[in-house]
Length: 289
Ligand code: SF4
Image 1 (cartoon, rainbow, N blue to C red):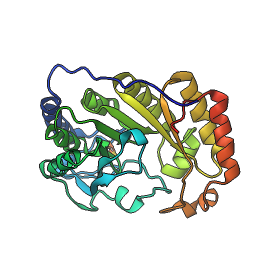
Image 2 (cartoon, helix red, strand yellow; image 1 turned 120 degrees about the horizontal axis):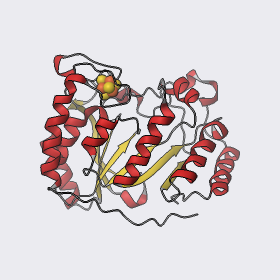
Image 3 (cartoon, rainbow, N blue to C red; image 1 turned 30 degrees about the vertical axis):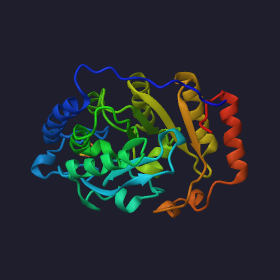
Image 4 (cartoon, rainbow, N blue to C red; image 1 turned 180 degrees about the horizontal axis):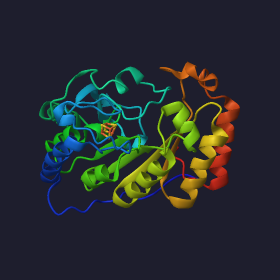
């Protein structure tokens, strides 16, 4: 089934730049007891303490450029990738930067916003914040938005492992959530990404995102994980978010530390890709072409 879901419009009582500025201030204060993601560390990042993501209070970035490899409806997009992540996916395609919040350059929200505005003037359709994981740098992300035009189409590309507190701060800010649902069970999430209680957290975030913005869910097919991961993800999406756009990606590459896991030492086979497509059909999922 091809997805034709209509765009959702976000209602706000104040302009987005003003709202983002106010939220950025609140988010920065909350770093004193950081619970921005579901790891719920409770460390004081303003005082130099670090939690599981190892991020300090200062954001850095490793990419800020126009990209054309994302979903067709979003590209060209001016993509800004903040360094550091709260998950530890051994197969991360940008593992070196994504795992290291000290990678790249110091992030100046105002300067990068100027580059984003220039990209929009040159024809970029959207501006996308990603990582690593942008949630761990929510103050910087919100400050960035405060410098952007109110009518720009903004995309929040996330691992969907943020906390309820982070969601509250993001309410009304991004037009599109482009969210991963990587694992269909907690055992695979723990083994491959050192992330406990994964399935519940992601489901909560997806349900919330669908009620507050446009939502596109991505699932990267992993070799050997069609039945244990893709099938339960597909079944849950079909039952709980039947109209949501789903991007099933079969371009897995054994990057970073994937070779730690025997089944991740090669790409996804043609048979597995076909099997995954059959599962999508079985559940009537609206796949993005
Ligand atoms: S962002 Fe998440 S992992 Fe990082 S310190 Fe805060 S709660 Fe911990």
